[in-house]
Length: 170
Image (cartoon, rainbow, N blue to C red; front, side, top):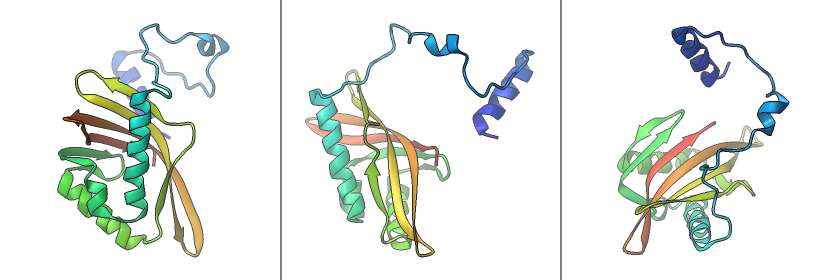
């Protein structure tokens, strides 16, 4: 049972409403339009291209297992939230990458095509949302898995750094 469903049941119990599990949304629910104020991802504009380039560069460093280069994309005050590993700061994140590279010397990451979304953050930078795929050899076989992430990039004086990461659905 997924955690969100358990939370839903708990909230339903606390508010006195009855929870009913549905395996698929009703057609009427699927036909509902998104609220007019819902932000739309910026496709193929300058901000999108900048973040796409940063993603490519940063994960080239990841795939090269260059922890120092990889960490140059993170702000000193980064907060990295991982659904399995918890919260880590800059030093803990760097240690985690170094440990990962040592334990899985063949690990690689790719961006799942078509999943990149970029949203501006007024007077700050951008949100970078996508699905990524990590692969490595385990017990003599290729082992791959997808996870989702949100990165918040801050732009200061033309330099982009990640200040927040939320990595989930592992």
